[in-house]
Image 1 (cartoon, rainbow, N blue to C red):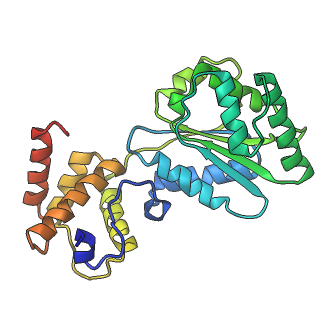
Image 2 (image 1 turned 60 degrees about the vertical axis):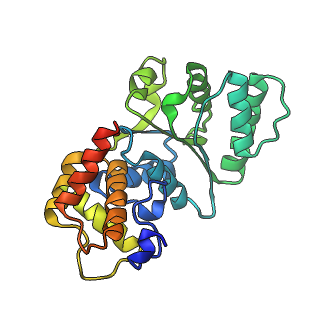
Image 3 (image 1 turned 120 degrees about the horizontal axis):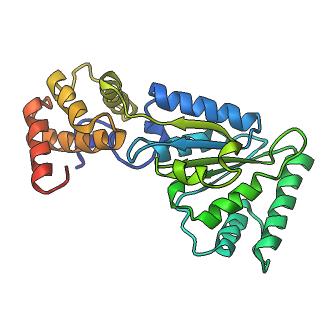
Length: 274
């Protein structure tokens, strides 16, 4: 039996999989989603979301895609943009967009993508959204291709709504590309949670997983220690809480105390996971 079944939960509350259902709407994440949605609906073109590892960027990206699951929107996502050449990148872009990949040159693909965007966005009045996650992995040539795609526009709006999501190291690279950074209509940085948001995230995810008991599972001093150890990074919070609940069930205890969390942290440090 899984620990969450033992706690009468219908889902694992602290999985690190990027499930939008468990995205805690912190101030930072809520503002990012709201601004992204506005930028896309206004067809502003390029939006940039930055954040350190574990701040919830991928989960945010999937939540954004869910927002545009409605008529009039065509949404796609690229998860791991590592390509050996310009040609491989534009071929992949074409496949993602649903363009048959039978062209022989990068230029042919660019022209095909432009025709596709004009047809879908102008003639059929759709909004095409492309989200690229882990964008710090994009090569210089791939970034140059994206810069070209952002040139496709009418007198009123950009044809492609591009959302680029990556780690902080991406920003200086974009600044070095001529005429790229000035195309950014939105730049937003995801911040770690503060101590109150950390506690609220833990409560939120438990309730999303079906916990409806009035009894608390985490002692207040345990929550304080979780925050100070994780520094408010959602992925680290989820990992630590997952291990704490497993131990709670195995030891047949009713409350995750500070001693339990401290023991988990000490074991992590001994095996070099800190």
